[in-house]
Image (cartoon, rainbow, N blue to C red):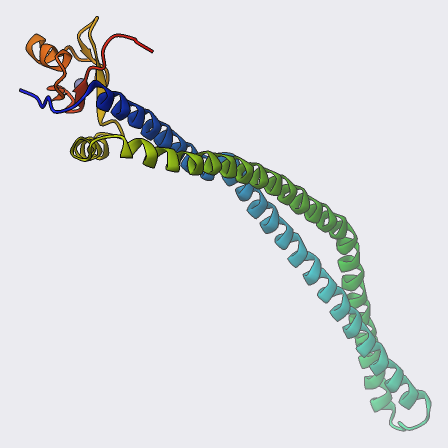
Length: 249
Ligand SMILES: [Zn+2]
């Protein structure tokens, strides 16, 4: 049968330690959950999406600006060539009628090319005028999404800090409570607690005869041993079973 080397007060101290450990476990879970905030994750995804959209519009605007500049440059170049050729043609530098005719044709060709480039440049400017407000819009959307993310992160950090403060305050209380439990009983408790999801001890419910941890009926003989002051292991869940007497405080 069980060990009767302990006092009721040892069991009461052990149950108090279990309450503190349960609270520590609850806080650790809450901290992990708070750190892994799905709202923050969703808002971060939204920021990333907004940034991608903004980059796409920015790229389009940059491309249109380059195109507008390039087309203008191409048009200017041809017009300069036209001016140069016309200067030669009308300046009397070219004597041959055949050559003049060829140059005339080339001039017409260059003028047509210059017109096409100018047209394309104007088209790029029209598209640019449509795209630029979209870029401003996309930038605003990024700013808005970042603001929401920052607020959610600040809120999460506040929550985590509060929980960590509570946890920090519990740790010295845990040490103090553990000091009040006999070392061998404490070692048994800690071993079971670690193996059994944070619960190492339960009080026997003498009215129902149930284990306070797994709520399975404790055999009568075992229950009697616990009631008489022994510490036993629940046959169902393996936790320590203790009895601290009827409500006296
Ligand atoms: Zn049990």
